[in-house]
Amino acid sequence: MNMENIQIKAVTIEDIDKLQEIGIQTFAETFSETNTQDNMKRYLDENFCVEKLAAELNNKDSLFYFAMFETRVIGYLKLNFGASQTELKDNTAVEIERIYVLKGFHGKNIGQILYQKAIQVAAEKNAGYVWLGVWENNKRAIRFYKKNGFVEFSKHIFRLGNDEQTDIMMKLQLKENGEMSNFNQAVEKPVV
Image 1 (cartoon, rainbow, N blue to C red):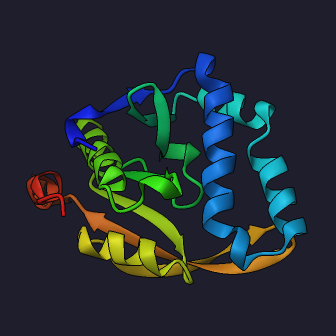
Image 2 (cartoon, one colour):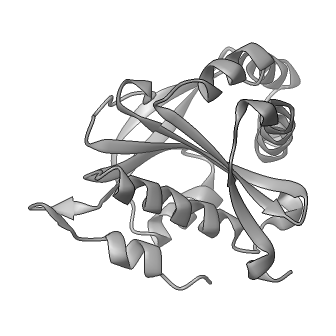
């Protein structure tokens, strides 16, 4: 697969069925083995129903992007700003709520391409930092974010069905003293 064949496309309300499909499939691929079937079903039903996705797509403070290979959606990114952030609600920050890639495309730098889109949007929004929460047992994702310069700053509880799980909160400073400190480094990191 040639990376030039990967396109990043802004998701619109017309794409809601594709968003629901990629959201359910990638979340299930990532977490089904380590969670009960009941908790997975409850989480997927609540968080990927058409009504919830439509509200998120219509929210001016949230953006979604697809990673496309030819005509196929193979991953997606969700960003939140201001009051739409799941926690901090900091107007100087951007939250990466989701970066998910189909399992069959892991190791092909699709996550890195989506991540670079997130950093580009954060720079356009003049954000001071980017933050996210990642499940403490998702070692692959934690390694990915650390490789990209994120550092731990706190923890919070994430509810999956009736299971309370611990997320590590991580952030990447983009600005120090009004300067874009890590932006060029973050965007120009070699794709490994």
